Amino acid sequence: MKLYFYFVLLDAAAASAAIEKRIIGSESCNSNRQYHVQIKSTQGGKTCGGALLNTRWVITASHCAEQEVKLKFALNLKWYQKPLKITVTKNEQTIPIKQQFTFKDEEGKAHDIMLIKLSKDVSPKLPTISYDKTGCTRPEKHANVEIGGTGPKEARGKPVNKATCATTQISQCGENDKPNSNYNSDETTVMCGFKPGVESCFGDAGSAVEYEEKLHGLIVSQPVDNCAQHIVMLDICPYIEWMEKTMKENS
Image (cartoon, rainbow, N blue to C red; front, side, top):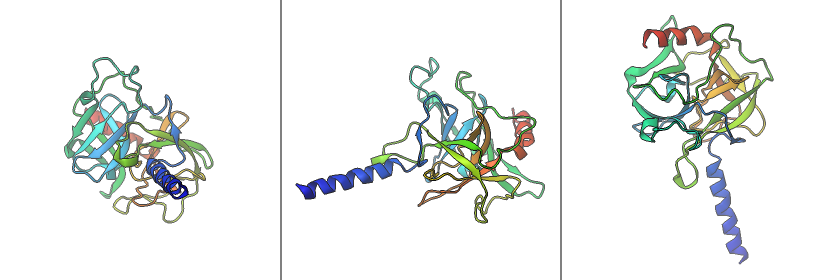
């Protein structure tokens, strides 16, 4: 009997670990992060998050796409909050590469931030996230910022259909705290977060960093095996002008 009980405990622990394979230290978002978008490669191998800016545009990290992807909306809406006549299929869109816009600097180097143009407008009743179009400044060191994500899957392969939320603190970036080497970055565009017990995992990249109820960054950490204790984020403030111009010129 004792041996059986021991194996039951092991199985429960393993299941719990699998469930936590997303933002570690997170909890239910309740009514928050309803703008969250789940992004998956149609070829498999990539799972990320994003944020709905308006009825036609989503923002995410560049490394989350750059190939055909499927977007899923309204993950954190309760059934009674979802707009009428919105079905599961209407809350999903497959987006080709030609509708994905990665920022490139004057030297032609790509940065890990992307705007995705949807093939058709989503319902205007779906929640979006706003950002400072003028006077945008990054959160100061030690400021609390909200992060979230879904990760790839729950225990025993069950798909995740909602995002979870956590709070981390803006901290000093280390020498190795940078986006993927395929993307250009420096101290003016990268910020980092650290809080004991809070980590981002595979599948959480591209998700919004929220400060004072507005979009201020994107998670660009992309751990594969282990989760990231020091979370690397891209500050969106240097990209506001590009964001506005891109959406206007491609409307």
